[in-house]
Image (tube, rainbow, N blue to C red; front, side):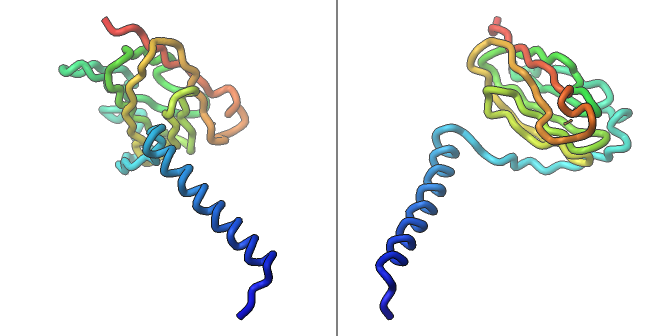
Length: 158
Ligand code: CUA
């Protein structure tokens, strides 16, 4: 069967595009640490406000120096409002929502997760540099979605 020259040309072009896109995903995963979240853990969303873990959002320093951040994303705020963590140590975020789907994105980092009611979103990141980072909700959650933001303040390690 004879395939028209132009048809063959565009077959090769589209094949090359697929290879390029898959390559971009591979490079992002291998070199830029861009990975989909893989943690699946459920929690009763109606009990988040009284739950032993999530009732009091907070920052905990573990014995080994790593940091645990228990956070809640809700209409229309993040708690804790300002999260203070040290630079250069692993920081594990555990976040859930008592109401609707929110986003938790720390701008200029690779921290970016959906926060769904009924689930605990967990991810670990090490901030290389001290500084102040903007946290945004990037899932439309209601009329004041655009106001939903907070800060992560990364401080120099002692
Ligand atoms: Cu919360 Cu948008």
